[in-house]
Amino acid sequence: MTTHCFTMQLKPGFEKEYKRRHDNIWPELQKLLSESGIEEYYIYLNEETGTLFAFQKLKASHATYDLPGDPIVKKWWSYMADIMETHPDNSPVETELKEVFCLKDSSKG
Image (cartoon, rainbow, N blue to C red; front, top):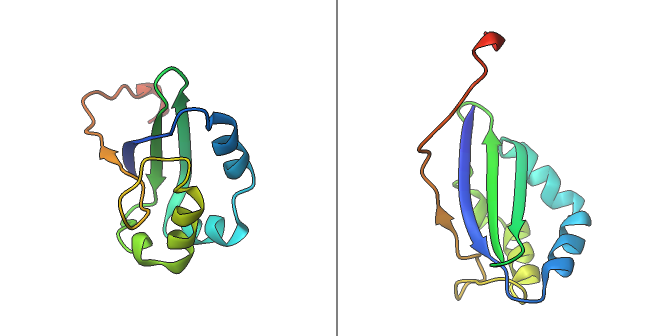
């Protein structure tokens, strides 16, 4: 399993709206993400800075490289663009994070 970690930036004052939109994620987007190999997807918010920390657990031999070209993803980006820092194409400004430490429970084989 591969883990993909990154940060994004929420605009000030949109914390509740961001959560509301994700609580009502579109079924077609959820299906697309799952079919793309994303087994788990977490997003955490630092309420003081508006920084969003996200990580995805991907099935072995899967990658999400094709997602940015999908019409459903582009529609979601447009839907979210008013409350997040984005590029001109409405894609969220993401900062990839590099793993620097991992602790695993060695008793779990």
